[in-house]
Image 1: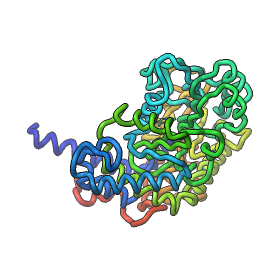
Image 2: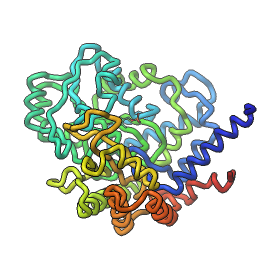
Image 3: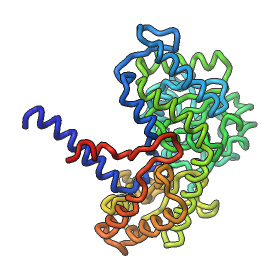
Image 4: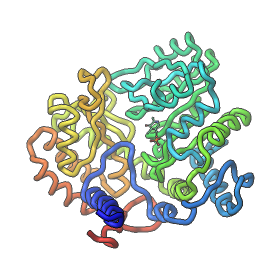
Length: 429
Ligand SMILES: *Cc1c(COP(=O)(O)O)cnc(C)c1O
């Protein structure tokens, strides 16, 4: 193969990927699709430039428009989340977390965090960012049925151990964290409260789920591409004092990044404006769809977690598919059917193999963004259940999924209209 052929091979694979997704139903709980205006920002000259430090105090020339974009994006973030401070520079949710860890904590400090079985994220694990800083990790007791931190038991742990920082927020995030119930414990222990809203940032922006900054949290970090429908990037929001905020910002730069990817910052700013306009309607529709999907699967005989509390109050639902052949088999059968989910370990999973766990995780944020409403979700739920139970072959289901997806070709809750899979038509195969 010539180098040219190899380049074209990569392009061809990217186009095949795009065609595959254009015909599939995307249900990964951490993904979303961007608006046309935000996508346009990614292809501008901004993506080739450098801007280090803060606006109007840069190290390179050429940043005058960048500074204006960053000022505007920061201000939109403060308005959207009603926070005193916003830093839109982290280039991922993990980078936002690493910045806070680096800015606020020293090796040997204690941090309390949810563990992986309780839906915690790898950045809060000993082999992730928290471990990199040499912190001592304590895990909260949680309820395995709802994967929610237990407030009384956790309060006792916080008062006894006095962690410097109490970190909350999960990657399997079905129900709000009971922050208010633990307020006295935070006070007594003198702990700072940090909420990792990576998964639920768009629900917070849409005034759903919970409002951590109004419930005792001082800092929120997040990814801007999960329920928040923007570019793959991160953010830090703060209602801290100025001195603490400056430490966090030094954790961003020079602590953990140099340049901060200016094209995706512009895409983030555009998405924030769209969220200020459409975010509340979008968040409400996401949650209605996740509850509908959970109820449909449940009525088809699939074991969905959190039944006692109505299955979910977020974009996510989790099903225990042990009796259906396990998480790996089910996720693979669904993929062959053009329905994309991930296998997931359940709390207290009888399978200790993360490559073959007992559960699957499903999110409704992306299908909601392309216009699925209640009846569409019920049709989809019945199709998923048939595949899980082995009543329909993946080949058969694939045709149904493809024709279902064909009806949803535009991104909603944004300015402008465009088929997100347009490149297929431009380049062809
Ligand atoms: C996804 C996630 C992150 C990290 O986000 P990236 O943007 O993928 O780096 C951090 N914390 C939690 C709880 C997450 O779910």
